[in-house]
Length: 397
Image (cartoon, rainbow, N blue to C red):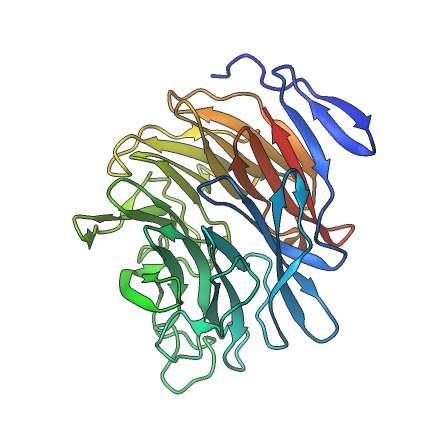
């Protein structure tokens, strides 16, 4: 059921900015982007103090540059170069990220490690001084295989950083240079990395997962949780969760039995957020022959879940993101056809009317729209497929 309308859209033009107002005093404002033409693969992150970071890739002559900017007093800082390279793996769905814990920044990108199309490593670099200097990157995994490693989740965890990723070490036949000849399935792994970039712990969380859907992680009162698209022997690819409880990882458990049977990877991962043991997950699925974007809630850190709430309006493409709000509610974003939409969803199973954030494209080059929250503002970033650059908007409510 829907609550009273969250959005009655009115377009205004104020000081050259595109402003969209709602009947509940919510306003969307298009922001100047620090990323210029030729940019893509955006990622948004807000630290525990609410400082917002935007990272992206820029295509240069013969190489790619990985940059970021932070928001202060409503203005984006001048872009700072994290790293650049000629042999990077750049992909619309497997994008670099940045995370912050006080003065310490950590970022990851993907670097090719062989001749295979999908042979690449996860490289992790860190900065102890808010990006003034960056350390030489390390390789997150140590299997040494020319295989696919990516779809990373990373976030601060206590005094360190928590990472989860898809690991293809078992997908290649020993001695081959790519994963065109499959030997085994993709696996899910996780690690804790300190601020210096040293790996402290590592685990295999699931030895059979979907090949190329993003992972997502959050921190509950008990510890980290990871949500991802699983893969059964008979090709059911539903979402599963693993939880770190009492110094150990639980076995994978489905968050909801969609029973989506598909022979290939749909390239559409989930998002999980948590506050204490209140947890929410958004994901894309095809159930009963219909595409859906669902949100589901848990009050016990992901041990059990309520009923899913469908938020799309019949043309779901997926590409979801999620932020947690006050009062046991979340804001979910997704693509409805070529349109980026968002809606407030509540743990009691109700939802507000959806909001149009921007017109985009269903093409892969438009990437995955990103979202984060700081105070009473929600920030959105996406790749404009027409202008070939990252664009940004903020929603104030």
